[in-house]
Length: 283
Image 1 (cartoon, one colour):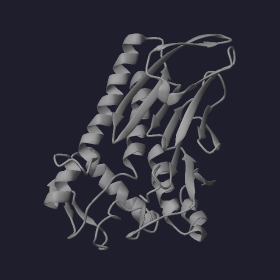
Image 2 (image 1 turned 135 degrees about the vertical axis):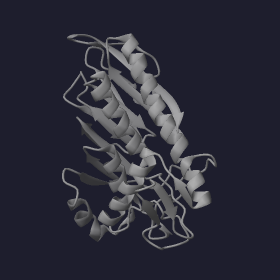
Image 3 (image 1 turned 180 degrees about the horizontal axis):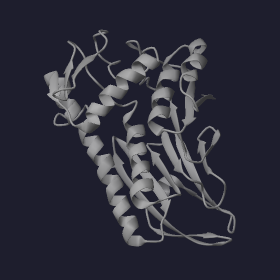
Image 4 (image 1 turned 180 degrees about the vertical axis):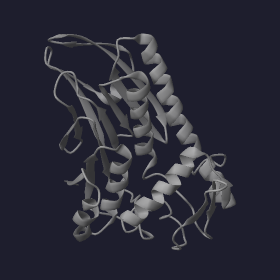
């Protein structure tokens, strides 16, 4: 589980990211920074964001836009929800899909091949038949192979973070922000105004410095249950895996794959992704 600290050198104060749910001013020795923040539940966890914006009207619009993105993706990718796009696809076996799901299905197959199958959205299926689905580009339609069930739990949060970051940068001209999704995926835009980067730490004491970069950590769930499957088997290791790099989505994919794969294969796996690094975190 990750925590992100906003440190004020004037008062030596520290605020944990998941406790921020209001809009206010944080002191700095060179002036006052207007902080906008957002917190809500989605994808069975919490989404939090803080960013610098001195326009309260624009901040409200950007907050609403981020929440729409995340909740929209949650409504499409939640396999436990019968009416979601992936719920319907898993049940019916064939379905026309919208742009988000179409892009994700293409990306996920590319990531499966690039990670030698250690990232696989069909890993929880009874069938080992791969590719797990067929895409009809003329109709933008997906058809699952027999016995396949898809789960986007190893990519959805990162995909949502990247979309929110692009929105903040491109549509609202935000240059300093920190987005935290579920305590396992974090993305920093620019730097903390109180320092050269966003400082992010784990409960075990590991620290990371983010500046226009992301971090994802994969491992056992907080209750100790295995939740990452590798080639049809649940994985249980005595450590977590942290991956840093430019894209939150790719970090999440790689942290899942590197946790799942044998230790001897990890360096070779990540070498195919320029600019990405991993670190083992012992429990």
